[in-house]
Length: 57
Length: 383
Image 1 (cartoon, rainbow over the protein chains, first blue to last red):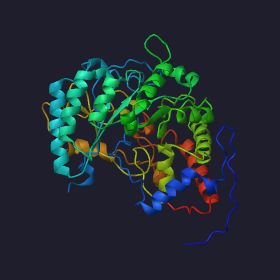
Image 2: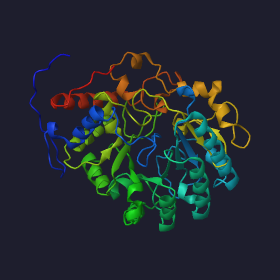
Image 3: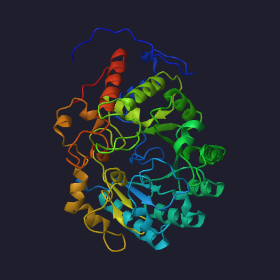
């Protein structure tokens, strides 16, 4: 694995009313990283639970 | 265990062939395919029984759960009594962990129907495109009246029920690339849905999607990239299915929906008369693109035999992109070549990249930039 130099997290420009966060503090991203690292690469709920079906409509 | 190519993953059950809305962009009614005219308005009890019987057998034989999505048209046009019969027999044959879902425009959502969905554990996804002025531009009824207020009323009815709260799967929006992504995001989030998803407008290399000037232009790519930035900056985000799938792939995980990544899925459609078709999104390519070579019907054919047929195998393999530009592309593992129908051209059939290729490239590039900037989240090399 190549060690990349540390990059300075950049805030995401945002003109919506959502509170701006630097990308390193992104809640959505942290949630996904946790799933990939700790839950076999996928959110625990599967395509067969209430939340998801595969059909793209 | 059966080979992956013969596992039935998702069945789209067209329980009603008509719709109480007439959305301008609808791929079922307004993209040249008239097959719905020859279908009964609703699925009969005998067809529902035949479907449930066969799916139950396949579930036991394949040893893997499947998902049934009640679809249409508008599935709630089936009516309460027939819906009760259908769900009873479906759930009896397809117990957990099989999923039963309904994709609805929400207008006809009543407490009595919600009672049924609670009783049979049916996930509910509602189609809504954003704020009223965005939604009502295309999602109108048959007299041209916008449906936004009625959809919101349906969602509120659902949310008022504490017993139905776990069933509210999410909202699904079709993108108007001329709209403001921030406004759409906030509007969708304000519905209280735990999960959002967005769809591009349909099109192909011969019929460009609405709002896309040329194959190389990136109207959707820009819109989606802006939405991505808003999503990642939200301190309390709902799920956003498309982005979660793509980002998960970039992080080394797996995707969950068709049209993202390179996993193939066994998807069949069953029409109200019992006819068995390929994925209905193929209608976007050309009329009858979703039909098998011969007429197949649950009353006369075993679905298990279809899954083992050459015709089905060819359809299943069609998910895999064949264009040389895709096969040599570093983003293929993320975009998967997009939806099959979006690759269509009269000259080259499906042997093209997606008509949204430039948009996908733009979006994935932005995802990579943002992930690389988030140094605590190492980016998985995917190719």
